Structure formats: C-alpha cells, structure tokens
Length: 405
Image 1 (cartoon, rainbow, N blue to C red):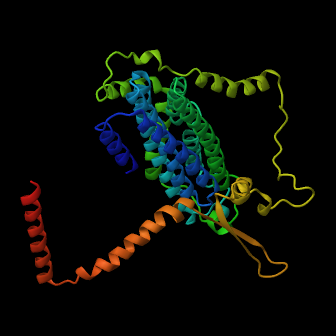
Image 2 (cartoon, rainbow, N blue to C red; image 1 turned 90 degrees about the horizontal axis):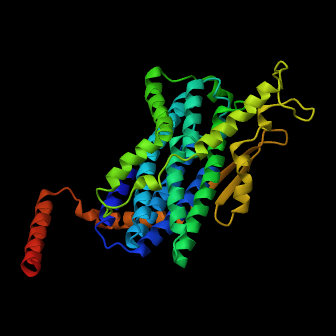
C-alpha cells in the first residue's frame, strides 16, 4: 500500500513544472524521514513496531532518490535524473520484498509465542531455526549489507547523492551532503535496530519460560513463501546490474532523456567483492595458521563468580538505553518500576511517546472525530431525509454548472 502512494506521487509530480527547489524539498524531507524513522525503530521493544517504523526510513531513502531525480530534471542534468529514478524504483522493489518478508516472519514469531514484546522473548533459534535463518537474511537485507538487495539500491542512492553533491550550487551541495550524512546515520541505526531485534528474539536465554516452551517451528506451507522472498533478497543484490539495466529502460520511457548512456555511471560495485573477501579472509587465515583447533567447550557465560541466569543478559531496553538518554529531548518516554516487596522481582517498563503522532497525527484525528460527531446527526436512518439530501445535492450541482460551466 505504501508503494501505491509512491507511484501516484511520481506520476503526479512528473506532470508539474520541474524545478530544482522541488528536488531540494524532497531531499530535506527524505533525510529527516531516514533518521527519525529508524531512530524510533531502534528504541521500540515491540518487534512488529520496529519493523513498521523502519518503513519510514526506507521511504525516506526512496525520497532521497526522487529528490535527486527531480533535481536533475529541474537542473537539466540527465545523468542525475536517470540515476535518481533508478535508485528510487530499485529501492521500492527491494523494500517491497524484504519488508513483506519481515512482516510475515513477525507473524511466525507471534504465532509461536503469542507476544510481541522483545523483553519476553529470547533463545527462539533453538525452537524455530528456519525462521531464525530467514529472519537473519531479511535483517541483513534491510540493513543494506552486501551482497543483498538493500545494499544494491542504497549504493545507487549514494551514487546519486555524490553526483548531486559535485554540482556548483551551494544549496545543492549542502542538501546532497545532508542526504549522504542521513543515509550513513540511518544505515548505522538500522544495523543497531535489527541487531537488537534479532538478538532479543532469537539469541540468548528465554526470558519468559511460558512463551519459550510453547514455541515451535511453523509449517512448511508458511515457510515456503518466506524462502522464496529470501532468495529474491539475494538474487536482486547479486544480479543488480541486470535489474538496473531493466529499470533504466523503464525510466527512459517517461523522462525527457535521449542521449545518456547509463553504463557510463552504473556498474556492479566492486565494494561487494571487497567486503565478501574481507569476510572470508579471517577464516582462511585461521585454517592456514592452524589456530583455535582445540575442542570447543560449551559453558555458561562468565558472571563474575555468580551463577549465570537469564536476567543477566542484555535486554531490548538496555541495548538502546544510551541513545534514549542522549536524545531524550526528542525521544520522550516514561519509565515505570514495579516491585511487590523487598525480595521480589523488579520489573522495569518503558513507554516511548512518538513525537510525530502526538504533535501531528493525533490532533488531526481528534479534529476529524469531532467533525464526525457533529455531522453524525444527518445519519438518522430516515429514508425521506436521505431523499432530501440527494435533492439538495442535485440542485447545488445544477447551480454550480449553470454559473461555472
């Protein structure tokens, strides 16, 4: 549904006069959405809410690509326009794949545990190994790590921002640099957010015995489409050059560009091979040097002489506690502590208030509800009144048509 709005936005915007200022506006709002969306994803303790908030970040990334595209159209720079549209459409495709995958995986987790609170989960990899592996692939994709599809489209977005940042205008350079910084910060926070989600849900010891004992892997019918989407996450990244060529041909059908060779500035990034090599080298060195050949000893983590228990592991709250404290002027939250007695278990809970919900959406919703209550009197269930409404409406249409048409 998000993609429907984006396609409508692109289609409508192409009908308007193309100005560089419009590209500036998209870059600014895209950068804000990148940072704030993933910031709320990082501090949420509800894994489904974290996945939903990350959509704000990814839509921000899409708008960065669109900002570069419309800037290129307004400034009559075909290379930036083409690259920006390709980046935006590529990330639209990738986001549809890995976000659908993550939401269906969250359904698997909820089906098995009947909870969305990460502070009640942990250790599910032992009970749901296939779901865990697929979730890991999806997390790598949404964190834009190579060679998966999230990295591919964000890499093209980076190239768009870099091309725009080399323009002569001060405003263009400033906003494209802001966009690059927002992409970097958003990427780092995305890694933190989904490292927290994956670690709190699948790793460590179970925090709630009841949720863990009843958990089991879902059926093969539910896993099959997830495996298909996970393979798309890999395939769209590995074969990104082919995808980019197809998207380039599509873009060239609706923007006034005729003399641009996209192969001059779109190529398979060598950084994928470099990072894969860096990931393999340590294991090769370990094998060649015959290091760490002793038998693996499985034991509980060291707990400073105490017996290790589940309450000693890092929870979802503590994982991002420093960010909450550092940005407390933006991220407003309430802390609550429950303790029945001196020797009883202490339960800490934190409720985060969404700044944009409180200041933007909730006032609009309240106004709409107030108006709905006031006009509700017209819905009285009487047929003669409804016939009168229709008659009045037709009279108004005729009056309007006689004066203005």
